[in-house]
Length: 336
Image (cartoon, rainbow, N blue to C red; front, side):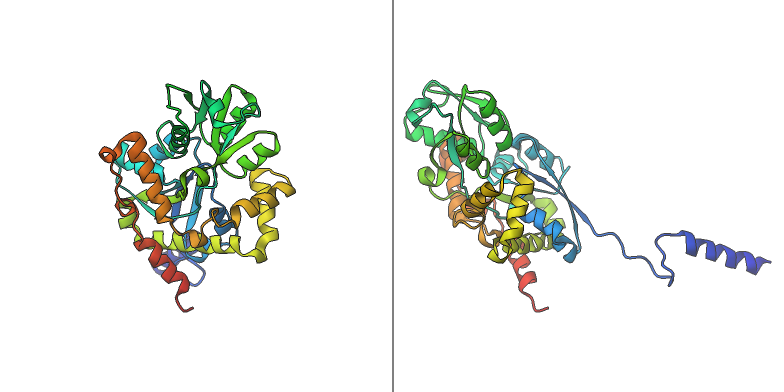
């Protein structure tokens, strides 16, 4: 009887424990989940890596959210509510210098194809004198682009124009549609392209005014990166493979469909976005590689306009560590 009860107990455990298979072996454990926060939208490469099962290929899962603004993104990463962030890399610098959070930029994404978009009644930068311009945050990233462009045209913030905080690119564009008193903002594609089709005016591109500029990139807390190097390398490898897939013209039809779906734009605008952003030389970056000259521009703007580092910008190496990216490329290129 005792033997019978022992056997019965073993069979009960065997058939009721989800961690044990019919062969008596442990089931495959769930892959680790990386929590990612994005601004102003999920990067196309992240979407493709999920839909093409590239994260699964590298043994990870990714949960991604979109932040309402850069302040929320920085706060979420600093509080360890998220593992990684994708946003303009100046946010990483601001997080380090203004909040004391030790962060590291680990992958690129796109150069700046932003434009200074204005209301139809505005015909020149000079027309912005006495007007209100809108930004995501007053002292980071594209707000600094805007301030520098206006300064080049002898317009000083607060003195010659007012700045109003609204939020991310989609929110700013929506605000400009609704409030004609919001004279201008920095917008990127596809919002900038949609705006021009609707009659808004481009006063010039940030490339034209500022030269190369590292826009969206991936960054994380340095301590987390050190503790999760293997996971980070796998994430970057999947991201780079996805970026390659997107920029392969053989997949143009699928990418156009993706653009239409994700940004709620017409087929014609998707084609324009594809040419102006996805495959343009100053758009999405090949292999999501950081543009170091563009990163230096971002640092220079912060030094000049915010007097960070007493006005003398450091080199990108202070915030960018290529170790993880290089190791990820080695994984991709390793013999199968």
